Length: 487
Ligand code: BG6
Image (cartoon, rainbow, N blue to C red; front, side):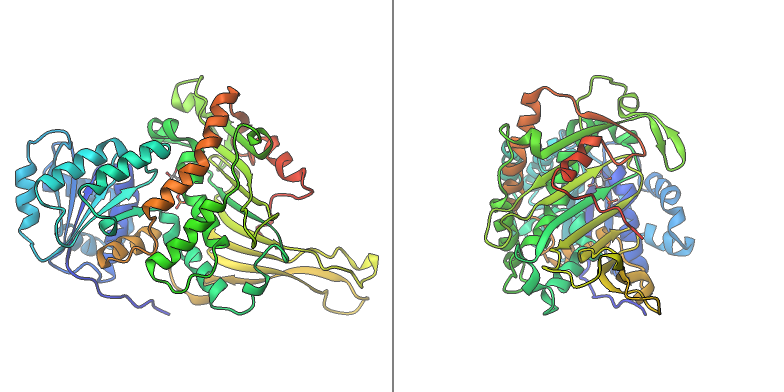
């Protein structure tokens, strides 16, 4: 089966931070794939911008190396004809007049300015775009997360960007919202009559959201040490997943209908602060160990700073204080250098009220709906059935298994492919609105402050393990275990 593609209008996409890690690993491969699928109209231009003094050909050569593995060289060469480069410094005037003239050559194009830079440059870049009137008309700005490092700095960025780009022109990207399974969660919940009546504290016992990575921080240590797992993953990706699981049914898929409901969830999260952070949160930092079959150094060695208190792992127990979810724990965890790369949402239903089966029939396990974001996107619904065949009535726990790749034979586009085209089309449904980002910080800030105030370093864990033992204790205290059966 082949996926059908919606057409897009001709566009200019400018990537600030055009030589950076995100541009090379995600944005340019995503654009190449969309080009291959015929979704980059011929007059569209992709312009990398960074401080390095490169020319168009120098940039293209670099891309030839980086994108070489992404398919056919004829396609790559055709794609590169639509790619160019401008050396610019966001903090200096030099070159901006010429850059503005270049952009204005295509007055009818949708203009997308993707700020894949440190947030400290957002204000300078937007000020210069505004000074050259590049923010007018069909212009959009894309902001990469994390937006700031706390509520105050996020507000500062939002105010500053907001002076030049209206909210409807501002696309705060959280690429987890572009993942296939996350969108499928909307369809599963609201396209089936089966789940919604059960989707509440009367029937759901608890929810787990895990985003585990095997990679360490590697060459991103400079950025990462100022962020940590809370700011890098939990405040954004994981909270967005939580919102999609927990929100009330929106009246439609209109961007604000969905975002209004997500905002209500964020605002209903019960506070975690100095009074309860040590009981409800665990933070960890990896030490040397074995990951992906090789010995790897610990975080302090990778960073070259043994005193860093930055967490590379966080697990916590959150609760949503509203009628639907009161009393249902949401266990959230994420970390680097864990044993597997797996992102999953596991929804565990309550046990049946009474068992009619003999005690030797086997254990009656609870139903669980597992939405796997990666790898092998898909959905499993764990049910209890009779073990087939003779020999008495024995219970068996088996998944109704729907692996998207196997079932539909479609190679899922990367989240960035979908989201970049959504920006061009002007569809902000899968982007974070200002008030969402700020509500997420409002909840995260007291946790970060409690950690700072405690003065306790993150707990060490071996690379290749599932984090500090305290994370296991966090859930076991409630008589539960982390969902690790990925069979
Ligand atoms: C990014 C984080 O937003 O998401 C990275 O900054 C992380 O630290 C990445 O590795 C994970 O994304 P994915 O799509 O590979 O799960």
